[in-house]
Length: 83
Image 1: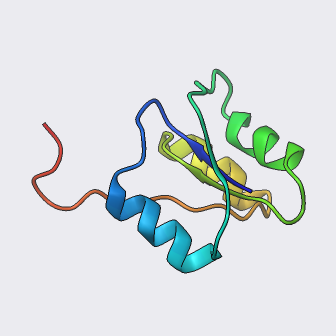
Image 2 (image 1 turned 90 degrees about the vertical axis):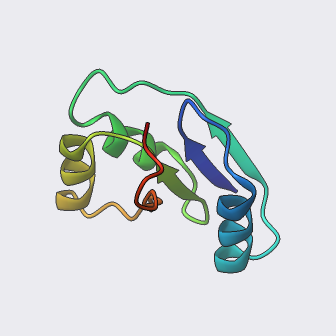
């Protein structure tokens, strides 16, 4: 299982990238909002060892999770995509 933590649906390109990286997996979107800096870390710690998390979150959330040793992914927006 791959978890997509975002208010937005995955684009077709993002979905294909996940399939290319993880094989034929189920992707579940969860529109979570992290109120605490360790929210992403806490979520990652609840998923199964064979699961993977991609998240759209603020830098403090990424840093907290990464410094705690959590593995996760995120997608970079191409230049000019933000409005």
